[in-house]
Image 1 (cartoon, rainbow, N blue to C red):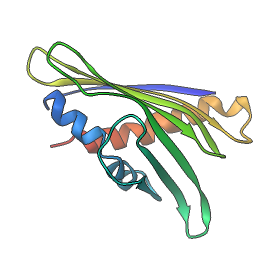
Image 2 (image 1 turned 45 degrees about the vertical axis):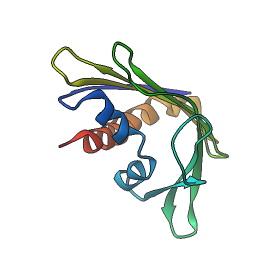
Image 3 (image 1 turned 90 degrees about the vertical axis):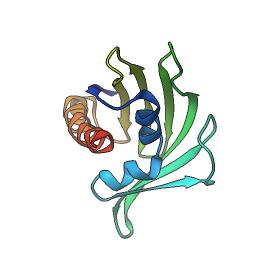
Image 4 (image 1 turned 180 degrees about the horizontal axis):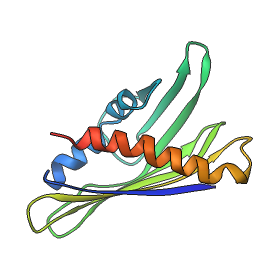
Length: 145
């Protein structure tokens, strides 16, 4: 299993960071060759399901996910969101925590555990490095002003 963690400090308030991070279609728009569809569309919460489709035309794969923990930040309490990846190709989990800072900004920590079907364990360090790079860029874009 490939594991990686990304942390960022931003000037945005925790509720704005949360809003941006839980805009699932926006994630797909930032990852190359990926689009995200929420099924069914509606408010975010536990049970929200969405699929990220990565590929070109008929060549690609789906990465279906479901929100299993959804606790928006509140005064004195960080926000926590956990996702389960339930696809044939990509399995694992992701979580992010949004914590307010004394300066009115936020700290975000994103943890991801991925398994790619057919990928040997020797590939885990490469997958983690690629994940840090791709998800780090997406996180930076989501949180930029």
